[in-house]
Length: 367
Image (cartoon, rainbow, N blue to C red; front, side, top):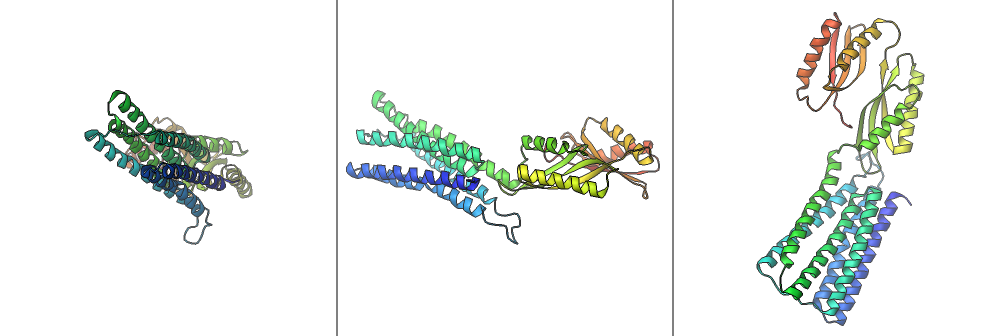
């Protein structure tokens, strides 16, 4: 069973649980002649909406790539999570409004044995369902499932708070219904905003996990002939589609055939292990006793002394043009790239007379 099938299975379980809970409430409500319980049963059917949205989003995300969408439809999952997060946020706001009303106009709750049984069953079902769905969402890295599970958990917490406040009212004649409801509503609103932030950040282009960056650098660096890994850039087109690029250092003694084989093996491993469609670029390290090697040593050693530079790489010497090009990655303390570049050129120029110097300011997109 693949990831999408597991997400759909979990969502179907959510729908079935809500339908069974709704049927239980409806049956009890009809037998007890309670319109309130029957209406609550209808509300449970609407709770299944988040699971339906997750299924639809997952199905749409599986559509094959086409001419207009060459990277597929994987990002549809993020839109599903956004819709569910908005539903949670709306529920929190609605609950807050109703709770504030109860603070100023408290009402004495009326509970019978039948309604208490219904409430306890609802709390248990929602807690179990919410924990299961949320846990599956975390394992499958599905924002939509996580949001759906959180929605069920919040339903259980709101119902439990209502039950607790009713008990306090009956025992000590103190109404906390509105206050507890308002506090929980604020927690739900905060959680809804956080749930909304996760898929929105993915759509905007969030930084990839440091664990994945570390794994890529370790694995690529372990290839025979690789003497450094730089410029890792990854674009997320859905939970299962990553497209990116990186550069490797190789000695300039390698020929085109060897470089082709090396980069091909790296690309194959990145796809097999991580599902990444990776383009591999090459930086050549000058070797031997020659002018190119001497210039490289002078430039690289000089730039390496700068603490504000996180990386120095990509040295290349254009012999016919008498031009040196080198890439530097500054840390976040550097805000003026042009000033940094001019200062470095000014420092290097006396060390390499007669050579034009080009400083390429790179940025750290992965670490």
